[in-house]
Length: 375
Image (cartoon, rainbow, N blue to C red; front, side, top):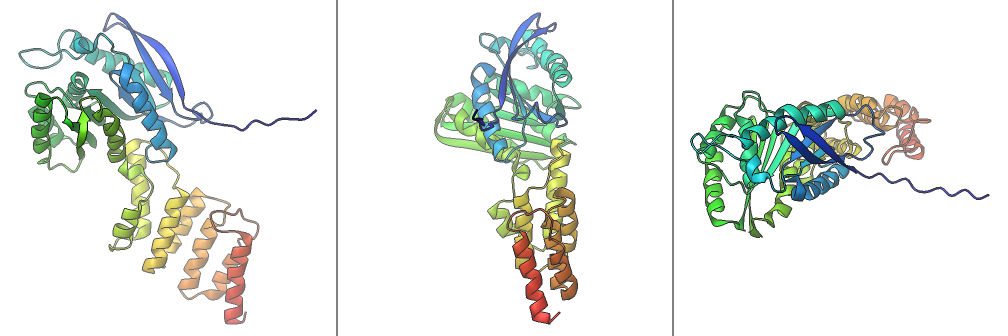
């Protein structure tokens, strides 16, 4: 009997769940997208993206998160959409005197902070890095979490917010005083609702004056977009700006930082991944392409001593492969130890090939040294 082997594909999973809220006195419908291979990676934990207006924003956000994480331009995340069809204005309600959540709005504020996040943390493997996203009424609402002494969310994605009175001053003051890392994204469009756009543009001018290294701020004013069509452009822009440090080393950073500044390429790589682990609470293996970028930078800048530390890092992240051996051999070769370099290249025999490195390549390098020096 013939055996048929089906190819294995991995897909993100979307679950539909109901949470019973004591704060709201009712049930709420949730859409939850788990990362690809969530079930297989049983030890891995994930940041969380909360999407208000989940009845229409969940799918575009979840799709973009899946796409960006597939190409490693953003970490894999658990995306949670809250269905607010018919309730969004009540959920986002605020007091007309102090302009803070009241009534149904206060209940919804507590539901998110005290019930939903606990539900997610108990049921799924979550990290402490959390992002929240909203549109007009709900975009205004997400900012109330900034006013808490220890804000629940690290990232705030504001899509054409319908800002309450005093909101811009309150947000600016909160961000100016933040002692922990915060990401703040704001977007409008050329054909956005006029009264919203005017206030958003003024708000942007305020935020541009922020002088706090703990805050990463990004603003977009998209051409030829309406209040609704701007969403399609804003979501990927927000992810791109928020997770810039997470992305692979870009051509721009390679040319302008690694080749044109005095920074050590290895120091740059170390700082990049320490920052990723610290900010997003994930243990990220150094990408092979990033190792290759640093290798090329060392060759261009002739900072041969950097190979010594790079070899240690390669051994840690890609043990059993030829990567660390090659970097060690290049170090010995360029620092005046050809015999030791030759022996190091020969040591690659039996190790696992990786990138452009294989047995034939490594032994050819050893033979070239042997021929040149007559060993």
